[in-house]
Length: 580
Ligand code: G6Q
Image 1 (cartoon, rainbow, N blue to C red):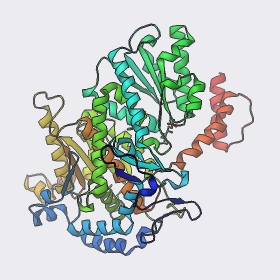
Image 2: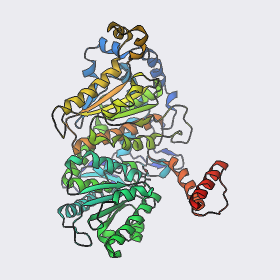
Image 3: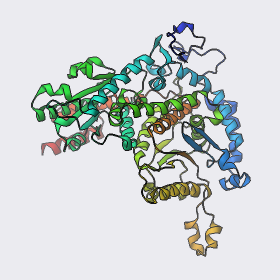
Image 4: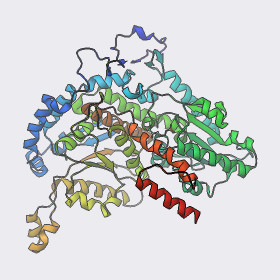
């Protein structure tokens, strides 16, 4: 459960709270919701609110954004919402006031408010792993009380944050010396998936604020090229490795960690060097100890933090090293501001709820298969890659929470590139192709590198693209310019292509935190509507297990092959190539 503690108050026992309890009930595989709440695994398409949206869609699908804008001169101001430093313009998807009302009704019917409360109260929403989902606790204010199994976890969170801050200060100031006495100049984060994409994205995004005497690098791929190219010009005496792995068993990370250790020991000629050049971020203290990392140099987190939601946990250590503790806490503050907004704002003004519902609207009613995330900021170049994991690993599911297969679309495909580069490659398809691509534009009023006219050029392009997508250019307008008739179809833009625009003053740590939390909660909103569990990832397991079977077959030249004929033939070819 979650509540704010009055200053100076002792932590009250969990039982004193009047807040409803939401406990996972393994016997029935549903949450222990109070009886007035909706059954969580119902097929949303059978709800009257969904059918009402289908009827409504029949009228919306024949409208054009040109007409919607012409009918309401204030549309571009009305379909907007603002929170935590982010301004959202959602006037350019095809929708009306009625759409928002009906989507809100669907969200209420699906129990979104109750699910939000349940998440913030530490309910075990991750049914298949029997875990609470409490990334919001990682950025809660210091005086918040959030209990998991009767324990207030916020002091634990701050104990780790305070240790991270002390360690970061030592490294940043040069007080932490490597084995040979040199200060650290290079940080190499060894992690993959949630233990890589978040810190990498945040480091790139906030590089402007980073200490330039330190450079962070990220090695994730088990392909040795990743490690080899990363350390090629590094001096082991000045390099600190962060082994970032929640489980400390992940094949890629463990392979890279062993290789890094060998590289370091070979470079410095002493096993004892490991102590000053390796730290760990993990929930698995025993495995960290076995690797040879001093437990004093391990930063922990908890099983209620999902990998792709772990950026604000100790997994963000590289970010704190780069930024310093103060700016890191600003980042957490941005997350927190969006968390509070999501928890408390009415749906019609709630940015994550609106964005989540718009994805449902376009995926399930218009049949859109894909969302392009288009940041007009070079620092956010890794943001689409980060979002791919957040969105698709969370909601790329085809069964509801109770295991019943869905008969409707769930997560769209997320992808993207920073502007303006995409304009010179794939935007052609967005403007004139046969696919309906929903676009999220992200821009800032101020550049962190104001040089000449660059920023006006950048933002003009972002605004122009959204305008062109929405309004297009009808054939008559093309013909009126004297274009020959045969060429007119080629130069016509149909328009009516949906986009939303997120605009912020400038890219700061707090704004990045708010942006990430916005997408996290939008993902959660969608999962609640679809009735799926956004917090497990069983779909990544089969490939891992099969790789485990194939590894010995690649290591051996003679072991009998028992796979399918295609896999067997490929293995034989691989073996032959390596023997020759
Ligand atoms: C994310 C997933 C996954 C995970 C990686 C790394 O939600 O759980 O991407 O983060 O597999 O796992 P470890 O941190 O345990 O090495």
